Structure formats: C-alpha cells, structure tokens
Image (cartoon, rainbow, N blue to C red; front, side, top):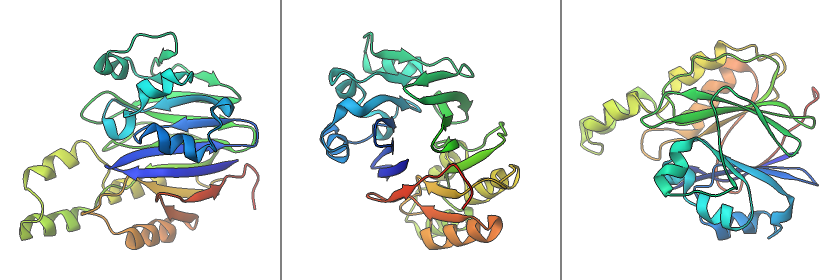
Length: 244
C-alpha cells in the first residue's frame, strides 16, 4: 500500500491510500483534475472517499467526486453546506465504523471550529492508520497503530514572533489555539500512545508561516525514534503492516 500526498496545507488537502487494486481518498481539497491525474485517470479503482469537515481546503471537490460516481463519506454538515442530496453522499455517524471496499474506517469527533472527524483506518496491507487533522487536541487513544498522519500546524514561539513583527494578526493566535494543533500538543499526543508497532509518522497541514518543517520533523523523530516526514505535494510513502 502506498500513501500518495497531493496536498497538505491551507491551499488544499488530499491523500490517497492506494494498492494495486483499490484506493481510498482522504480529503478532496484540490481540483478534481489533480486527483484524477494522481490516480492515472482510473477512478474505477476508487473504493470511496472520506472527508473530515466542510472547509474547502478539505472538501472542495465533494460534489465533483459524487458526479464522477464515487461514494463520499462525510459528516452531514459537509453535504448540508454544499446543498448536496444524493445516494452517493454517505453521512457519517461519529463513533460508528463502516467499510469502504477493503478499508475499515472508524470516525471520531475532534475539536475544530466546525464539526470535524478524525479517522482510524484499517487495511490488511497496512494495519491501523491514524489520521488526525484540523483539531487542537484529541481525547481518544488508539492501540496497535502502524502508521500515523497527524497535524503539526504551528509552534507557539514562531507564532508569537510573527505577531510581534506584524507578519501575523494578533487575532490569529486565538483562532489557531482553538482550531489547529500546536507542535507541543502533537508531541504530547504521540507520547500518550503506544508507538511500539508504528513504522511511520507523517506530519500534516503545517502552516506556511508558523511552522518549520525541518525542526518539527527533527523534534518528533527525536521524541519517538520513528521515521518521520513532513507531508508535501508529490510525496509518496510505502505503508507496511509488518515490522521492518
């Protein structure tokens, strides 16, 4: 199984879990043409698409995906915001698991400024994948994880520096504090989990102004001892279920 990252920022988020035979799309915050291109224009292998919340950098192409014949699973607020009523618009009930092809998905609520879901995704080729974005914390702990995609949006020291210099509006601090994950929170959540079977950690949705990719990766790698990368457009990661 490969993880293809098409985008992971406020400009647009999209991740594809892709085996030889099927694919699960996580977030559709990019234009449909870019998503189709990443799939080699073969939408037949797409088992479905899951979307965390209604903001366009995550849900831009929900309607186009449905029109293309793909089932989209999302919180009801996503379809309500976009005025979509369709048999392929599948409303997710938090904490009620479902299957998409050979993928098993467990959705759980997280803390953002609109209703937002995190996902625990299981597949026989990967084991358990934790996907956690656009939240300032997480009250859930999961066991037997193989791979983690987790937001590390900003660091407080960089944000304060940007506010002091006038580069960032002071009002942004409160919004970020209650909508996105700060680096120390990311590290705290990772430390709260049993990481003994985790093979990869991918830091997602880094702020363009208030993060430092190299620093964030180094700090998480030093904390966990696990292969850590920062998500970027075009990055491809092999996801294994067995220990190296």
